[in-house]
Image (cartoon, rainbow, N blue to C red):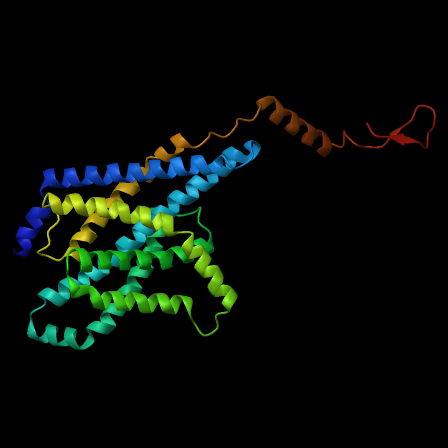
Length: 297
């Protein structure tokens, strides 16, 4: 197929609408699974703290799920570019340069994808409920997430073209865990934080599997341009879906509303502050019988 034929295929509006609705339904189902899980876990918390603990944990878990999907999308984007260039670049001068520098260019693309992932986290869907340690663990899990996709392509589709990518990411993971000034305590902490993200990673992989299964079954995703590229296209729809779900604030339907303050109590506090400022409370007052005695008014 030519580039124009690929473009016509992927931009057919009926197929695009079907695939987008599938991505949206998958994102909502994932949200409901997380809500149900957090509801069950919150039952272990004392009732007086349950609502707050549930709300905080729910938003944190959902944003970690967002982070894994966006991490996978950003990494797959540049790997797809690399794959397409390596496959379709035929002009002799450019091909010679590519063949002599493609390993370095692959590493550069991976670094750019990590920078892009940070931009996604701050501008597309700000992940404000995730702390520094969790964010670092998500980077590691994001690499494992992509490796699992490659293994799926390798053994399910029997396509060995991505073995080099797997080795690159394994090297990056080893570099993430083992570095010269690392202590054993740092290693254990990083491992614990990464292992806590595994259930979210499995949910993200299930979401990806759903998209790829229906995409390849109904011929919207094509194997002829590379399974990796088609998986990236699926992630584009997934990111758009979670973007809409996030900004629709549908998650707030499942979180307890804040208790409204009594306006009379608020007014009473304000009045008391004004009285203190005007020195009308807690100032010394002379007693009726003893000029030297004081009492608190």
